[in-house]
Length: 387
Image 1 (tube, rainbow, N blue to C red):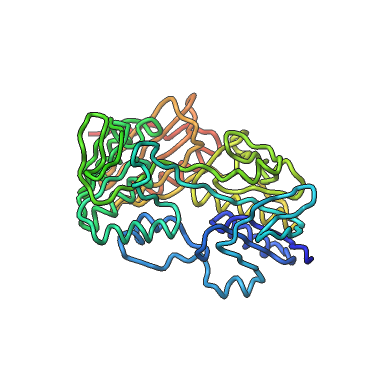
Image 2 (image 1 turned 45 degrees about the vertical axis):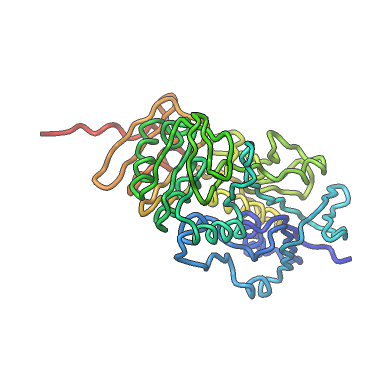
């Protein structure tokens, strides 16, 4: 049986980035990518924005011929069922396939609504999910989105821009109040509601019925479509079964993406990776970070040396507004909002050192913030107003 130079479990950004990096760094062995997802690898960020609004159908990461040109055996819709780290094999279609290096880029699955009728709610994670949601929206006049994380805000705005009457329901008074603070949350709420969305905060869903979404105050919100944007759960089952170190549902890796087993790496949402800049392990669920992880894992598998040191960050588009965020993701003890003519910046500090920055139409602050966070310097001082 032919030994694969590299096997990758997962066809998301981490997995495909690992393929690209492996080839770019001289990895010449056969590459096998296996994935439970039946679709060709695609970009996920447009699914809650351009794709949901019907503005594009082009979300492919690469055309089919790219995989042929780079000698990649892409087995989509054919998931791995077992990993044997001692035998250096991955089982696909009942067949154990030997590998030299393995990258676990298994991603995560949507966390459903644990309430009666929760199975009625749609999810938005995969391209198939996005097709179902877009089709449901095309014949609907109203929708409820549960959860005001960035995906929830993006999807709610996109549905409203399609002409639906949209209600966004969340447990916080304003979106992401616990994560970003009340002042930032108010600005995010304003971005969402400016697209026509109705925001209902301090509310929890108790059930979903034929009549609509029932809230904990007894009110039923009538709707044709329900979307649960309530977070994700990493796919760490294969790693746990293989005996790899797993913590809080994620695979523990070093800054080089190496797991506790020889020649096995993990990248993306499923990993709990060490970041050399901050000096500790961090869990991230952002597209760019998944790509960074995959690039490092692929380089390592090809014999190159690379480590993770970037400050986690991502972009979000809510309606017509672009919001960007850099942060270590473990809280702050002070925040300061700076309003601009067409946007805002929120600086976050802990012990007088910048640990995060949230911007809307303030790219210079976003770029500046990345450097300040990485070098552990304070946020810019408040500017004095002159008369």
